[in-house]
Length: 408
Image (cartoon, rainbow, N blue to C red; front, side, top):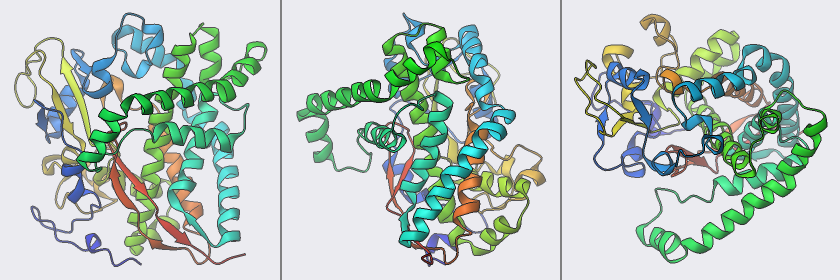
């Protein structure tokens, strides 16, 4: 067990323990966008997320030009167009697909990762979680006709090209201002390499033999090259980067709470999901979700929201709203959701029409990852991860967590 002080720290605001790992760094590492109306009110956040007048905002969302919806990922669309596009891919995230298509893939990937781990006796957790998240996401997308390990590394490199919030100011100035043109060019080259080596072979394979995946859908609907790249990189960010980070966080939390780890390993699938979702409640992957109304939104839990007002939903704050989550909001309690009679994911996957469509896939991946990894004989987390903050995902990044086991 780790001696990490956060495992037994006393919450400075409420009674009970404070089990959060990222609480001390999130404010400095992930500042809100200027002129935001920040909320930690669960009911108000739900009103905002469910309002038909709200649009995604801040960061990349503010730079999107909606002249050609065919070249915009459905994640950023609204109204009927969003509903139709979302419905067209819903089957990829359905329970039947998860069990019949993705469970065997998760098992195969974990068999390989565990075998490599036991042969070497050590591993880096975020590298293992990256491979699992990438394997599943690329199956959903349909990038399955090229070297999978090389594809994973290309995705990793492209997604890692964004600067981290915890970099020093002089570094950001040098990287973004002085040499921004160079890094932009390098990223563009890498994206083109992704198209040539991974996307083009997938297109060729599916033109005559379509499959039940996103790539086949895009071919059938005549997506442009740009449209395909945008959609694939959106899936990479939502399906690979975020899930990869949470799997590392879950390992860290369970290792620091051996009683919870034992309960997880001895529990039913339902209980395992409850534990995972409770970890996600206090350590949501996203820091803030942003929305901006196209018209006044009256009668919310915090009054009227004026047209154009940028709203920042603090997911950590919302998930710790005592009026919803009950006592000791910063303490891990897998029985909390059942006791409070609310969905265990709380606001961790968002809400309303833009709620994360792949939430169940991410939860199943995490359960597979934890259930296999933590059972390896001699498993130990010997080096906890370093915490950073990502510009691209608006959430935490966990790196260089080292685990060891008995060698076979």
